[in-house]
Length: 310
Image 1: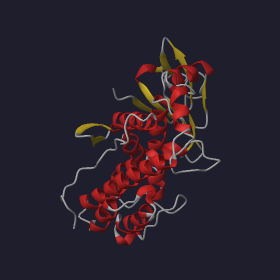
Image 2: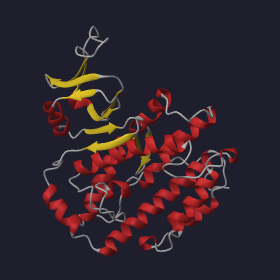
Image 3: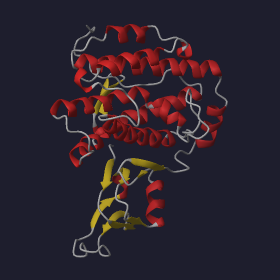
């Protein structure tokens, strides 16, 4: 089942009533006459809190995390700034935590090799969709070594970002860089929350990564596992700038397109499914790798319109 992503953009009070998330406006000046809005909590996968004057009850938060829903807070510029997740998402959590902690370096290097290969392959498919030469990326994906010893990910990124957007944009990928970095940042934040939620649901510790190791990063594993999914965000952003160059402001229209990311169809293990479902399957496969039940992470793929690249 694909859970809903709820984005709340106006002042309101959020509470829980009869297992429903309730948006109440009774105490908001000028909005007192607006009727309450409700959403079944069991249908929610993610809640994005955009407005700085949203208040909510502790009881609602507890109900949301009990349903394994992710809650994202946004700063004054309406960009995601925080993520709230459940501490317990799986009955086998303790066992899987231990297996994750005890994972050997050879296993982690093999898993990172698979991750980088899947990411570069999907990047090549993005370029192919816009008929941009992608042979270099196809070759790089085929030659990724254990642990990505040759840093193929960085080589691929250099070529990919140089060519993904039209030359007139003079684009370079940097978090605080000029547009459309703002669109990419927003999309990646939604993706990160989706992946972190799935990892917790699979009984894994999102802090303990395969490759990413930052003592100040609580979501290192999420940052690892989301890498092959990033190109799905890139496709949305490239589609946006094909229609307009006015992307300095992250408008409601752009956010709506990016918030649909969890429902985007992807191919995984020969089957088509919404991205949110695919992420859950990926997270489960990661847990099985740690438990020694398999050595392959299930990652999604973008369609290949050119079958071989230019």
